[in-house]
Length: 298
Image 1 (cartoon, rainbow, N blue to C red):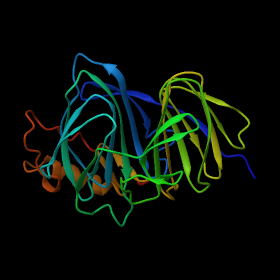
Image 2 (cartoon, rainbow, N blue to C red; image 1 turned 120 degrees about the horizontal axis):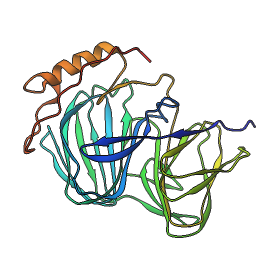
Image 3 (cartoon, rainbow, N blue to C red; image 1 turned 180 degrees about the horizontal axis):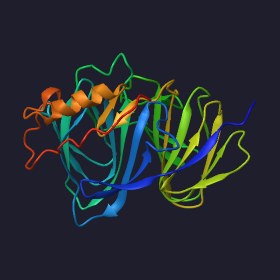
Image 4 (cartoon, rainbow, N blue to C red; image 1 turned 90 degrees about the vertical axis):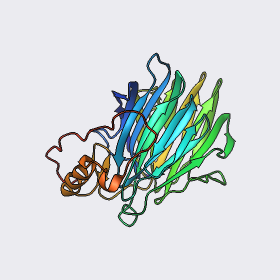
């Protein structure tokens, strides 16, 4: 059995609505992990300026928000209005098109915001919004695990997905050492959120030590991974079946062809938001579409 391909990927620092973030995906080194095509980590931080993201459009994807500390108010063009609290997930499936806003209600914030690319058969589906106040919890060799999406150790998350996916939050208060079984057909990303974690994929000779700001990619074919921490730590384990061709991602859109992006940008520039609609209840301007760059098919 050959050793799995393992790659360290440095996140880049950005800003979302006044909140500093570290973005692990997309990256020059790797654009997707399964259908996971975007991964932001915000906090843990106490801010003097609360996050405020005005109405903006999405299409061809699901936005997946996992709250660890703090509260955020979500509004969208379907009329949804939902506060996201710690231990909860908001899943907004844009499909054909949707727009939404996000406002933090607390000074303390810690969350992960991820995007899931929709497959061809689903990317024009009607938009929807779902809130999941409770998720399965399980102990994995000392790690306190919350199953965000997919199946693990006989449990299944209520959060739906249109492609085979795994998302798990793993946290510990002190020393822990556990081996997690993996699906050989999946590729994975270990995304630290707090503390240092030693990661030892089966068949990989080097123990990789990672901390927030570094994502560790583990390619298909790996049967298990050992996760160790000497102190308090938290990480996301993301996995999925590799896509044959990564989708095209620009601004808030996930598509396949540059011409689609131009058409969607023109739609959002309309006063009525075109296919994306209007967010009611938000006080402030919506986010203007930036100039469409010269895009190429993936």
